[in-house]
Image (cartoon, rainbow, N blue to C red; front, side):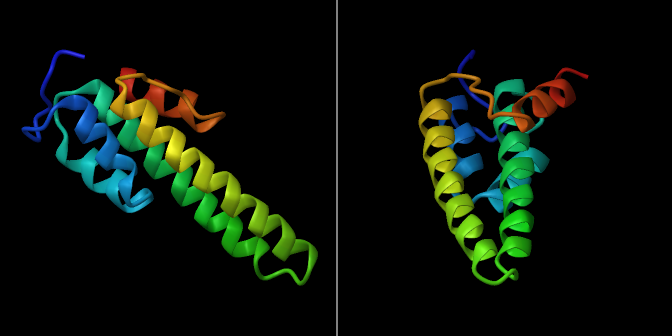
Length: 110
């Protein structure tokens, strides 16, 4: 990390903000950030992960009993990754979530 993002914030704060409101803040930061690959990586990872989990939990939540259990577990898992994402971003680490982290990294490199 070299300091500041094009959002006139330090890179670690901008990356943390990408996780703050899930996929919505990920989308906003991804669209606004033009220079920092670190911030863009975290924003894209946030966008893809939280949007995917929203869809998955929404579908599971419509299935009686067993789906509700899996949806609740998915909600707990999502909350855990939300905390991990914010902490790692603030610490300046390009921490990759399973599956979506590799996807986000590939998109940012290209």
